[in-house]
Length: 497
Ligand code: GAL
Image: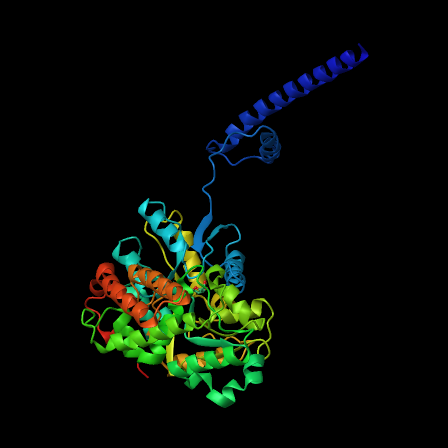
């Protein structure tokens, strides 16, 4: 009973308070109406006081307002491994400092090299729900989106940021199609690098015996691998990762440039040779490389668990002393730095070969119908800025796309490769979207994976290689790579030095 009475008096107090509030709100609404109505005479000081009170009360009883338009940057990238993740976070930080009220809606898709993300993006574009921007390789990969009509030109960003003065012409050409720029590059990576464990190399006297890896040829590479297996059987001579398949095609592209030289490499990947004729000289270089890979698989020169590993897990084998060598791109430097592996003790790097630089560039773009196009342009300007390029590349293992940015690299590898970028012959990477047609590269992933699988299982090497060549011929035909690059000469793809 007592409790009931207390509750009753509490309730009446609440009702009275509510009535008072309603009355105040009504008066407030009245004055608010007055204050917002056009008045021929300036408001007197008394009115100002009243309006101040009104504002306060109005907040007690808010009137519904329209939902604010979300300030977002919807972005897709595939940087989830060590080094990559920290690098893109450094760019987000620069963006956030400039645009603190914009929410970054990040969609990282693991897989490395866009192995998984590219399919997701094509799906979003096809369904008319593009993000504001997404990671794309400059070159053929970018051209495919342009040809399909999914991207808007970003000429204004290039102009406003003065990019033509600071981006090298080879890279400009990889961002420009039909007379327009369609992407803003953030870096230059090198695909042809031999990563090795210096302790193992020293212990076995590899460099004394076989010379500097920068000068090795295909056969020396095979001989070194065999020598390591013979003298240190517990160590995998060459690290490999085939879980996402592409690191194997990556090995193939590097060995093809090493053995066939830049012209053969370009002719093969752009389909600019008499590919239906088995006697074309390009085939003999390709055959040698396929044979080397098959022999390595058959003789157990790769780590046997390669079907389970991703690119960074294979790199880990090198710094942990479980594998002696790894042929891969220089995001490996970013990975080694991210895990604190020591240069000179746990890892070292040699351009492979030094005379050629297989380049690739990560860039961002502006899809047509992007939900927040102005914010996307702000992002592209951050990507183009010296600050973002310096911070990103320091961590990433690459060098800036801008030639006027020279970070103080913590490793001795980058100063060498930055110098090579100016002096070596340049060709675009096939596996990383420079000179590819995606369909052809994807078929190569499958052909090479089955070559390695059958050679590992003991198949005859020549028979397996012949079968692979037949499959590649069909893949060139089927993928449409020849017509894709129609009108482009071999010189378009090579910067000779
Ligand atoms: C490449 C990309 C690099 C690197 C690598 C592994 O395609 O350009 O930035 O991160 O994939 O994910």
